[in-house]
Length: 597
Image (cartoon, rainbow, N blue to C red; front, side, top):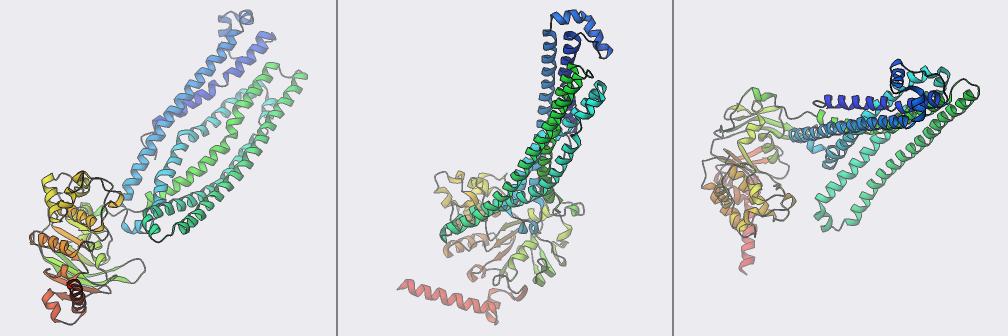
């Protein structure tokens, strides 16, 4: 996760250590000024310090120029602040880069996860993990991870100096240090579980909000606003309760840790006063101890807060890791059959004894065998749940099958690169999805390098050009999210134009004209038939008039092919197709009689 930023983090830690070390100079300077300059006692300091004092004139010069000690304290504090700034800058740059790379990895990984993963995952929860959880990790890396080292560095510098000044006072100055650290560790273990529960509650709330906003028209249509508000209130209340529990635990931690820290300072204050009265330590040493304890104690005390943030970050890291650990679509088979992006298949599709099961459910497809010649039009008919769309999804490799085989131009589909397979297929699925962009961008999605003339031709074949030309901004008209500003039929025709512009050798229309009126549907089918032979076409539809001109029609029921043949052949044999034809013909005749009246 920290790849490429270790050097910058190392520099931030080094700056933090220097800042911590320099922060201990002011107490030592104050001790020297009090004991050596003012009280006239013997100087206990390293030789280079003594040499420096002699160089500037000795005790007499310092006694008449105490501002030098004050200036030295100001300079030391300024240098410490400079290194703290560098620490914050480098750590922030590194954390922002890590967060950006992590978001890119998550987005890329989500793009390559199989449909079976997205079928089970909640969109709102995924959004939560890619945004809020990543931001939690970023904040921890920017501030807290370096602060852990700061507390340790402060203690590592302070302990030897205090022991050198006075062993007994040093031990008294650290008598409550162990309980403070132990208390912080217990607090960390406590809040980690609470953070996990809180993130789950937040993810559930976000998922519900996302789902509700996506289906807001359904909510309005069924007047379910109050019901949905009540459900959201339950999720919101659970999230609030988890936060309240966290705040309760943190309130206990801060109050008790304050008591421990104040008690530690009180011990130093009382013991120092006693030792001064007994003549065992000087006033300057007592001053230095008070400053030292204040310098290292509060960073150590803040380890509890740092660990709380660490607990939150570890929960976020686990949640993000669950996405990254999920297995993506297997691209290892790309090396088996390398394909040029410009290569086109002829369009022969063969299904051999194909069966498919969703999880542990009953089979969706059962022993399907079928051949579609290049350039042929295959129509697929059947009741809902008969396996029509599943057959298409397997051809697109949105799901992988285990039993049987699908061959494209004689090559096993599972041995071919998914991207190559999908590049050869233009699909208009049951629920056409449009982005909240211009119509031009939506249509050119499949082939962004296409010329405007080709785009207009594709829209004309889909009988959408005249409608687009009637818009104020034409092809630059921005449609709403999921194409909500267009009618259902217009969305389908834009999706069809997108597939036609892609100019694939295989075209799939999965109930793609269900929202289009019969007249427009016939015009679209007529335009597509004029291109007959240029591409293999698979059409799923419920209107038999849509299927009549197909080279071959198959009828599916309960995951099996129960009938196959041309329109004329299927009308001559008993079965589902003939029954549906009679029903639809009767309804159309009845509708004509009503209209003629």
